[in-house]
Amino acid sequence: MDDLEKYIAKRKKRSAAFAQDFDAGYEEFKIGAVLRQAREQAGMTQEELAQKLQTRKSAISRIENHAEDIRLSTLRCMAEALGKQLVVHLA
Image (tube, one colour):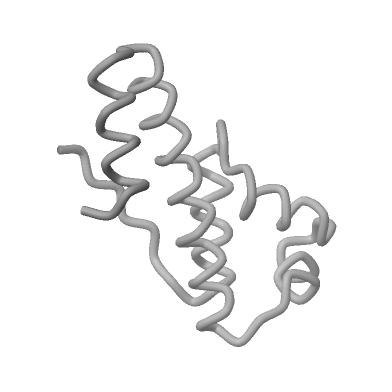
């Protein structure tokens, strides 16, 4: 565990609110990062994906950088445009 991970673990133990906010923020970040990675693996730019989805590049950027409250229908459309399939797993 590196210093950052130790710091985060320590803060989570001290503050339930921090832990909840951190975990929620991390999940939103992870969704955006996965979408960006899928787009890049498909060899597409944000502009190209936006054109395929009939939206603006800024909308794709916003989703990739701040994927909070993204709709499942939007995720499905993005996945299909990237030649992927959306799979939702509840644990």
